Image (cartoon, rainbow, N blue to C red; front, side, top):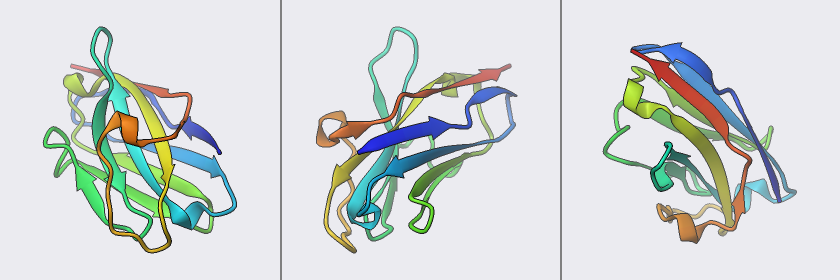
Length: 126
């Protein structure tokens, strides 16, 4: 499984960005997907996840501002980020793990994912 993240960039506080992550896998609909981020000097942290069946979970830091979604026809997972804050500045990584078709289980731990994208940098200026 290969994951290719894109969509990062520089944005002012209060602005929006949409990250995309394209997956090269034939059974995309059977995978749970997640977004994590890592700021300089900090550990990688959970941002959002979506189960194979479309159930979502968010970290408290982004709940109400970020939305994760998936498009099975395009083998792509998205992260819509609104009302961005300087503390959202980080490298954002998409991740995937094998699940089962229509599953409701969400995964929030770094160690729970088997495949990772290369990361895309998001910088929010104040």
